[in-house]
Image (cartoon, helix red, strand yellow):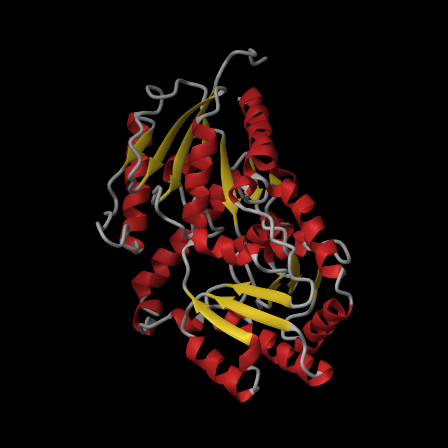
Length: 407
């Protein structure tokens, strides 16, 4: 039995390839937030492996597998960085197997972790008890508009095919040996179960958000329905569906009192601007462009409803941002939106590409001016279930405690 005053030793191996205060990308932000909230827990004795860091903390081990650019903050890693991180983690873990944390250690492979892609060689070959996650399922539709290089020669080369085969085999072993796998959505658990992993070894713990970092939306304008979409402008994100829905609303209502702000840039921006003109809805749409996170929070605060028309999401961090900001949500049933949006409570779901269904929901909000405020209030309540500090961290601590007792 674990003593009440004993500490749980944890090795994050790695916590991510980069651990930076300045990085705002989804997974990188998850890693840094998790470092923040676990490193100050008295009952945890933690060491964090990472490929590069700007954090001055003796518990953070910089394996120097990539570099930090003075202006851009990071240099995007490639396959060589991933292999280097895996090998240097393996060597460090062998050298420090008992010396750093003692003989009773929970190994947590935090990020990156994708089934049949991510590998931790130490945990594959040594009989240690370990946890994997947060795990996302892969996207069902690739972002073809992101690719700018021809990879056909590489893709069909014998060497690449052989390496990919070995990678998938080792990754499958890595996942099957895990004591627990943390899935971030119910969709992810279903995906992993369909791949043959034991559902009893899979726990659902969503990625969280620090609710106190967001201010509730201001409820001053009762007449104009203020809509917002914050996303990278890719085909997969479904902004065309949103624009066609707005046109349908205009055609049905006449001159609706609504306005949509689109936050973000991307390869589809010019095509979307052109479509906006063709649909003759320019007066209802504003393209805001890229904004830093603090500025986006201000836009949330002055909105009523968040719209997500994405064709697919592995997670969807903007859903939690919308909840924490107290926005009602209209979304396709993808990623965390499927779990967090509750009909007639804090929003509504519509099917992928169904601009008529989205238009009906917007019209419903226009006709019932109190409904948007009801949805907004409920979102703030639901956001509590995703708060890193008060909801998500306790679930991790319980998992660590249960795992530690089983060692």
